[in-house]
Image (spheres, rainbow, N blue to C red):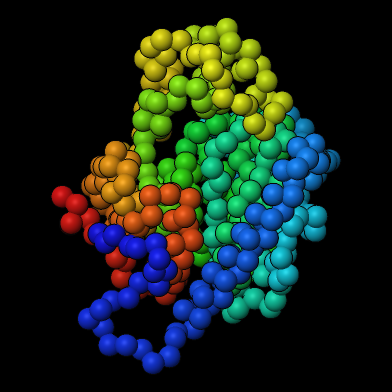
Length: 414
């Protein structure tokens, strides 16, 4: 395990002879980093301008729900991963060279029911390589439960510059919304298992919509969605899709219960209560929420952002509620068998508690039989890791596509 310095995006191995010419991969990555920097700069200017008018920002940030997202409930029978419909879409803030297709497909709810999820596919505006574009399955962070807050309804796709970077490196990106964001079903907020199923079943649906996609795919999650892509690896141990090559967890790993130990003033418990109610219908939010909390809870399906509260929204001892504990236990990481490799990219020692928990979870993952590689970066801001680690991500992905031996530093963590 090495600590990478943020200022050096390209890691140099000092005992290796210098290379007189950059490799094609290094050249592509350099271009992608330049593109990413330009995109982020453009986004920052746009955000500064938009902040002058909140109303105007809201108008331009979210796209309207259209008939594309409408589905009957219950659905006509369909297998998980079966495409319901697709639609080329040009109203996103897409850079030149990137195309988008929306998809609607069958998946399974947290309770195993047939539900629909929406999502999108981003792909290069050029002839695909032999065998098609390799696929990155993007798992977005959990931030809302409102139907109209689906990432595919955001003009900037929430993480647009990062996703466009992958496309400019020659990959297609399949990004599920998760069932219930976009479609008219109830969203299982923070339930890694069902969210992982949505990621997995988005792949065959995307391939039906865009046959130029390659068979091989890798899942990537950032910050709070890092656990989801670990859950993808756990689910794939049962599914055994030979084309799934592994997962990359960016921003470290934390167990769900630890994320809520210090959530005072945050609106996250409102969304958590919604997710628990989705999985356990007999659970009543009033068991853990105060009157003020219940008042805000009634708004979670109507707004993308619930402001923090200066008044307590959770009751004393709410973390000991039996349904909360069951939900946390269901979403503990590192207790299920694995058969695919995982790359974990995390911060350095600036956040000792987070770093220690990441190491602890990686140790558990190592005990499940699959190679795990943990890399740390010196920048304490988890949001910067996705850009700092571009070379490491691409090298790891290309290694999986080429069938090279999988790196692991599990032995260093025991």
